[in-house]
Length: 179
Image 1 (cartoon, rainbow, N blue to C red):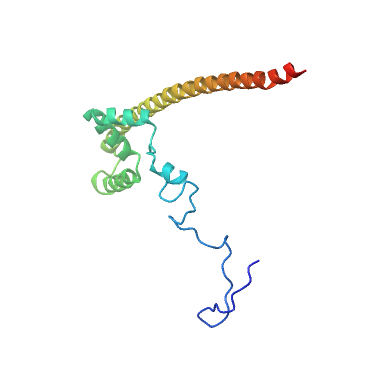
Image 2 (tube, helix red, strand yellow; image 1 turned 90 degrees about the horizontal axis):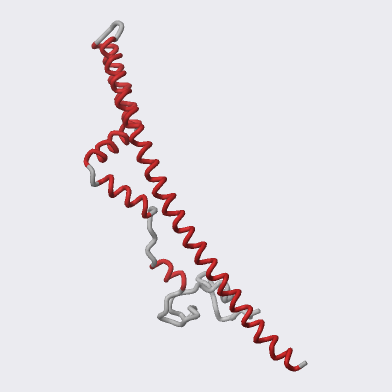
């Protein structure tokens, strides 16, 4: 343990204990990096790598949909129909319609709501098809990536086996010749 320096005092005049190495803050460029000053640590190198926000298959599908005006309109309608703003607007409009426009038995409102339900169900199906396309593209890409990874791991395992057998033969060969 380090003995306290009697001459060291804090701002209130009481003696202070020097910091231990564990308590000393590490600063960049002080030689704490095993590679030496001026070299990036592994964490710094990893932080510089680009990390995709989405699966590339989904990004590709989104780009395809963004290029088609009909699909963009369908996506906008589906997004709006699935929002609370859509619900609030309908509550307001139905209330106004029932109280001020048509009193009994609301035949026009029934017709409007039925037609809207038909169109909205179509847009829901469009959204489900879009989601299915995204999921299929992602599944295909994931499958291909996993197959490539499996082949790579199999090749590495075979190489390790070959190297291990070779090392085994080299190490045992001299001991067998001595006996």
